[in-house]
Image (cartoon, rainbow, N blue to C red; front, side, top):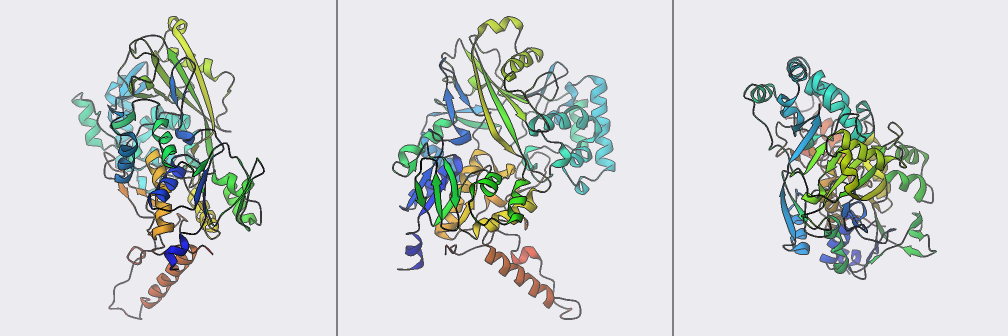
Length: 531
């Protein structure tokens, strides 16, 4: 039996039936791998990408998902499972400020602000981009000030990002931003203001797909029939014995594994779920990861939809939510009757820095919609659905210490045959969209079975003027994902090369960089050892 055949006998257990777990299971099935099984604590497939239909006939997503893709594989998977049962939507996105609607992104359309605020934002931008250096910024807060200036920072970037992340900007790193933040230059700002022109088209998701029926979760539900016999729901993990490679479930069942792919929150995995000799430094590091929670409040209204908007951002303090989506505009089947009903999905973050009262969040959301001009007091009588979902883990915070934590924890887990992936398994918001998440599962399987390098987990973004073509799949040396043995080998190779190129040794030979040696690339071009 050769190495490949021997590996195919290994039992792979997957924890979590969200996009990452489903992607891993789907790819295993596609490769003809038989000895694997997927478990999820919920009675449904999809994780945070699931959808729910309430008693009034409104369908709700857990947050404002839009389906756009960076990957051919993801697109092919979507097409195969959904066929033509989807709608292609054009994004129409706005910011609500100063009792008016400003086209998104805000920093490109400051001409819509009151004149004194517009001047404050424009002068601050000029000062920032002529006298400040964003490359010297040590965190996201400093980056905001250095790129956008005091005016934009004060009126939009800081208040909005606090409402989203529920953490101070100074506690966040700047590496996550990439194509999510348009870095505006002075000429573009001046042109838009002086010529009174709008800048609508920026962004990686200005066109997006959406299932005709069943919300975002319908796509993920369709993995079920493909994976029939390979998954179990209502299976809550009680603890994992990493020494004996066994998963203990709350119902008393025990499952052995050779390889474990888990999408459990990384902090929970290391501090609570792993039962055994987890070193104190690993527990302490994992416990330092930060996240926010979220309240998703759905308001169903028996009226024709008054707008063609997709979603809107709310930086001001007259409402609890940071984003509202006209979910009924994504598909006519999201409400009981598209001609007479519409729906608003409102998202509010929470953390120790930003506590929120779950008992009052629905009423505060409705009042916030009234304060923002989206509803009137008279509209209250037409509200026929109030839906709320609380996600304890909603956003993985890209904190300043995150990459150092991952550099410790991920290799330690992988050395024990545990591969932590997904939105909270890898804790990298910048690669936590649904397409990224699914591909994390696909790529870890490709790595384990085919010996291919993972790319998504180490994706790096550069800030560009329009955000397009900003992705570079080069892994940071701190990313902490890969075979530790290979990492050590590469470090030794680099040290030897640097010694060989030391001054006076071979002065006529050029120095070899880390990039040329591949030290910053995802390691492991061969199959993973699973001893």
